[in-house]
Length: 114
Length: 115
Image (cartoon, rainbow over all chains, first blue to last red; front, top):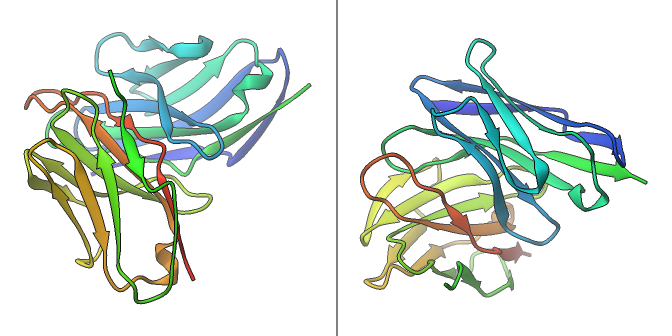
């Protein structure tokens, strides 16, 4: 079974500051890990995914995440926050193989302060 | 290339009624997954359809059922609606080749309100 825990349901940063959204995973098999973004009244958009290749994954909109097996973490970062980054972010996990069930965390709402 | 579309956008029903939500998968995708996202929560996996067969199910009662059609579009049916069924229902399509998981592309969702 797989699960993810997102630390902090709300995070506020100033425009131009570092964004750090935390995610820890639990998986009995090698995982696929994802970060999705959801803007108000919209579906989910994939930011990036870890698929057992490089541990540092670069995604869209300047986001990146690092897979750390020893810490069972997959934190999302962006060096400089932009107002347009204000949204809800979901960490998710799936088994490396098998049917494609994705288990999501509870989400972190990012507020960017001008 | 057309993305994942869902209909209707919004729906209001009363307790005990039945509802059908529809999803058109992205061109070339043979797998559709349905998720329920309650307010303030992450999406919860309902079930997945692959080549017209249910391919996996989350912790949802049998009154949640689905179909996938030969063109890979899909329906989610919910019988005997309860107040707690009020949520955003998301459909995601992907291409299942039997190997490592491929990316799921999400539709905009259907907002269901049960009164």
